Picture 1 (cartoon, rainbow, N blue to C red):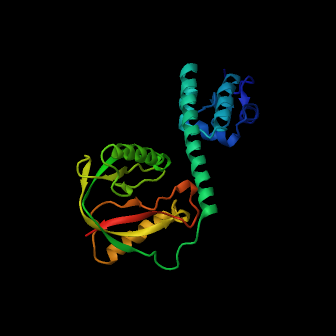
Picture 2 (picture 1 turned 90 degrees about the vertical axis):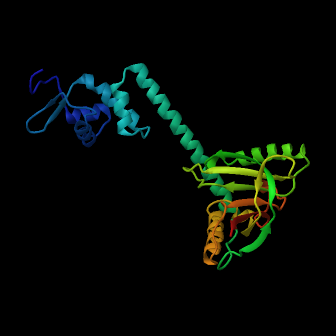
Picture 3 (picture 1 turned 180 degrees about the vertical axis):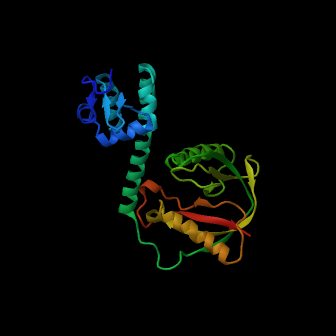
Length: 270
């Protein structure tokens, strides 16, 4: 084709027929995603009709909120590879949306049941914990996978019952940060007698705050953790083990009322 070939489409005509704006076409030219067949010295762009397929495909993929880098890879790939990349992208989107839907549902429930935080500081108490043995399971989980804690608790409790019984409230140790992105190690512990196996838990003192159902979920419970850490620091102590949640009230969390105590947030110190 020669310059000014009437078979070429102006950028305006190409934009109208492809479903892409002229602004987007200029951007895709600069990116190398969809270059015009001809660019005049004045910067005027013209396209072939064969390029309409790529333009329309880009327009459709943009409706999926797909990043331009991924669109470029799909447009450049042969059909089966392009289909595979698109399928993998959409599977990841659905997984992310499912996690976001779960988070939104939890926040709706939590906000509906939330009770006011206490005026001033959270009431921190101190107790001594004797040396003991615990059966435990540890796993890297993010916030959406914390349902594993209940499963692990049930398994460990059943195992403890076969070895002399449970010798105290179970507790969950957070060895690292756990949120929607971080997968800090989480350890579920069930106290047992010294002959039942497991690992030793040394004697210690711990600062703790009783937590009601209305304060149990983020963001409220994170403020409780902050309060316990602050109390330890302000009283000149040092944490000697990771923070934990101690479940000694016998409450079934899902059935608890907002004011029911469900656990203690505790921090061993020395």
